[in-house]
Image 1 (cartoon, one colour):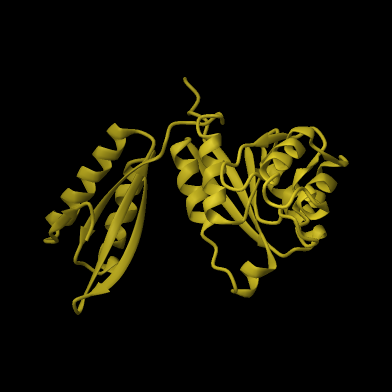
Image 2 (spheres, one colour; image 1 turned 90 degrees about the horizontal axis):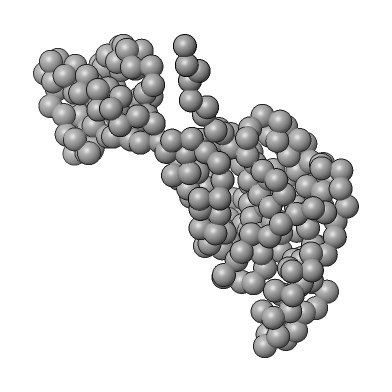
Length: 253
């Protein structure tokens, strides 16, 4: 008997009072989740925490134990309230040090931008034993320590850091998906969805209802790491819907 393929998982900690206050709308959760799926890794949990060291430490300790990888976004900038590095170092039980390569990168970047001052030098601080994640956007690198990744809060900078990590992480098979749209109330087909998912153990079916043009409908998103199983589940759900008199729109409505 062969053991099932390992499902690699990740947690994400979104750090910042500005997210919790609503002043800034987070965009990193979606882009991290999407990127992870391409790497064959599932984003399993997200925590949004304030700029409070104890809360960050608590979240890091919990999610490090729970998942294969842990990502953080936010709080690695030049100001006094950018405390992610200090909090992560405290959680790991290591000191904060100036990374020589990070310092050199920042010196080059700021050479024609007023020079490297004390605030900017803060962006060269890392938990001892860390590596750097390249950042083509603003010079200040992200930080990697084992399976823990500290990234910027600014979405386009985070995107660049994720791009630099593409293909660098061990993961499983990428998650595939197929969408079926139908003008039907999801409550009318809830049992069909349950039965179809139960009959296809390697697939998950998500139901996303909507109201348009004075009518109710839903898009059903089927996900699996197996293209063959995905097609089988999709065909089964299509047959079930059409058999009950509901026309199906491949790709969604």
